[in-house]
Length: 548
Image (cartoon, rainbow, N blue to C red):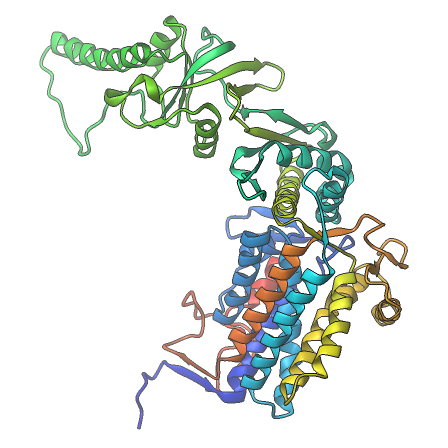
């Protein structure tokens, strides 16, 4: 009996598992070469010709033209890791891919997917317990250790050349927006940190500024550009002549009628400016446009106005000045205005806005670079470092990097596997093997022998050297913590959990039913050979190869 349409495709059992595992592993292998300080970059060219050069895992996966449902599930792992921990996206995806590779070996031994999933869950839970046991506590005021965390995050990225300067800026920025909660914990409000970029100068000239930096010009040359204490109006309404929602035609029979029409428009603009003046505002940051005539009137009143201010800047200024965002000038009140000092840097063409009050914590990281590509990658590296430092301050736990934690976890999981009964024991051992992918790939990307490196690391950990990790620059096994390679425990826990959940999600699927072409975008131009069952190759994964 035929119950599906003639265009429908279906793959079942072992073929479905093989298809899904192959798709997921293709994604993992696409980013493996970017892992670690010696990781390589990818060049991604989108359909518009815009170029992105990066080794940030989540950026690569987001920019790649992936049109396969299973592959997109793995991309979601990277996005979750980025949202929850800020870094470790490549690690999470690589471990997920290796878990599926090892699971495929178990499936070929006729071990049921349910047993593998149960074993992976046991191993994931045990690994997170061991991470908490191995982790060392860090105080929020331990600046040296926090700088090491930031430097570790930036190593291998374009921000590495100036990582000491940037790490100092990042730690200072996080400290300024950290508050202690009633229960003694520390909360970092990253919304009070803004990142602005500027091209044409060296990254070594990056700086941390108190307050906001607005990369805009005053709308009129005669406007004042400096206030010690200014009333700030944040406006989300255009100071322009109001236009009708529908197209209209106005019939004019004489020059007098035309003049009256123009006079009415001028009166409307003057009325809007008068409302701003009556509110008491000294400075207006407008998210939309300001008419030329309104600019003239505002300048005459001694009011500084900036138009087309970015939405993110308006949001930051709201937190910084205590102002409310006004969407209707008719309803403006004195309480809607904020307070700040403002000055203009004529050399950089920037406005510096500094909030007034003890509860104001907003700071801006002004990142400089020689070109747009350099600045973009610098911003990505600094953003990741900000997230991991903030996570470290809030979580209060750190680990030795350089593959040290993965080798130690693998060793402990193998010991734990002896206490697990049934076929789940094999899955726990497979999980331990998958974790050791990280030091192996670190060694490969550094041009070292991955097998010799892993043997040396295992030997060191068997001797009780919990912090023993790989120095990719010398090829030696040493105390990674003392060498300054420090990672946040939260990011590692999240990576293990995300990888395990993604692998289990893929393994649980034993039947794929597609209404048509097996892709998420409905593209008929599948590339790659069809697997057993007639399903179209990687379902659009061929586009990845052209992106790198």
